[in-house]
Image (cartoon, rainbow, N blue to C red; front, side, top):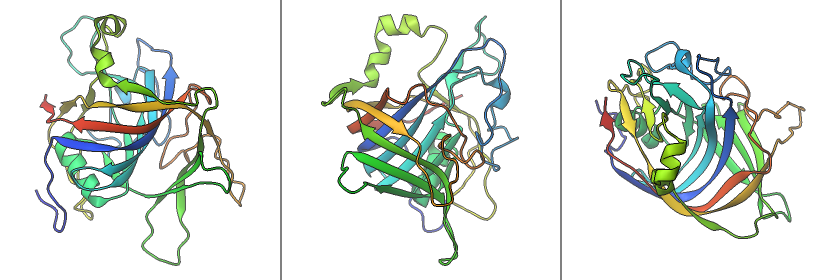
Length: 279
């Protein structure tokens, strides 16, 4: 189905821009473990899109991305990939484990609509603010808020943080997802897949951008670019709201980063989101 006034941009997509990756880590568990509150939006929670009962920990990440160009134009993005989920009915003795995007916000309806229909990515729209403190051009303050329809209503932040380039690495280095295909790395990752597993999505009856996806998709994005180390810190607000968990715990999960100092600033990158494989 098409959404009135929104462009249809089928896969594959070519994108480029700037971003930050915040690694997460929970010890892998052979039995499922709970996800934090806010890991799924109310629209997806409790539906086929909800993989909470199959979460096993492992390595995940939070990403903030500023796409300068994409198949639907520039947009901003906040992504939560908590870790690894067991694929249902896997015929392997030990099962197959895939990462999945469970919570994601973008700044345009065109990205919401096409991300959901192309790859089953549960996108919702939000407003993004990126700013720099006076005399600190290498520090970025980020605030993500839910959209408001009343211009006099206050914004409702759901995520806040400060990011800065690390003095431990005053230069950028090349990076590439192709490194995940090196045989040595493949052996280390045996039993896991560097591919997103995205189940079907429901639609929102009052918002045509939040369309349904009836398929389960496997999608393996590829990217290359230049990156350097970055630090992460919570920020404060005038009402002293606690943002040490970065999310508000409802609209975006609170999380503990693997490290405050070992995060990554992707100064520039190019990415392709391919035509997905339908399961």
